[in-house]
Length: 246
Image 1 (cartoon, rainbow, N blue to C red):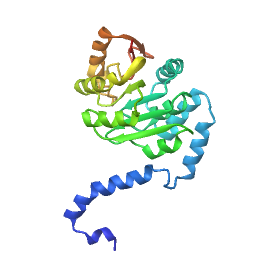
Image 2: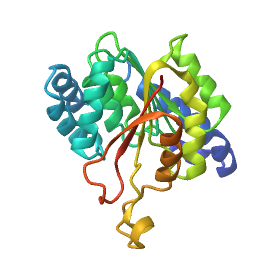
Image 3: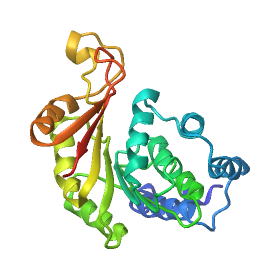
Image 4: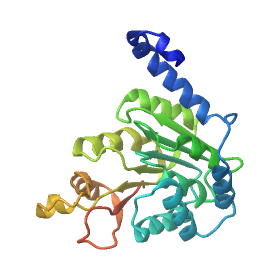
């Protein structure tokens, strides 16, 4: 008999969140055993291949969803910036976090925020020597989460902030207003999905969802010095907007 069946369902419901939190903490710890495939993947990432090779690995190991022209263009800008501290709001499967850790030799501390940071244990395991990856599970749009981010920054300002979380107008605005003040002068903020999807523009549902980021992006362009990384203005969503914090 499964030991958990000895407990009444009501008690299991009470204990489940605590158990799941403890299990996640164990899986993300350095002491938990890791699959051989993770060790091989980490060795591959540490071998310092090209950005294109790392993008391929981000796809196979973490299921990244990016247009190569756009994300590689962003990495070019970031290499010139040489960020040490990165915050990502909306990590999805972790592909972007993987790139920020391994395609940028300067990064020392990367903080990922999501309701559930998928592949968190894997990202922590892949981190380079001297580098830390922090996975913060929870709602990004709260002062409590911002306080957790600040705690993980340990007095450091943010060099680069990537926002790819809640794609509603209110959501992306809240994420920007909460975390942009943490970015140092001279740093960079980037937003994903600044191009409206085809459902929004043409009423044709293709399964691609960019939400209302394009609306908030139009406002940011009137307030900041910006740049756009868009492969094709007529594409179905995607696109990266870059804000320079002057």
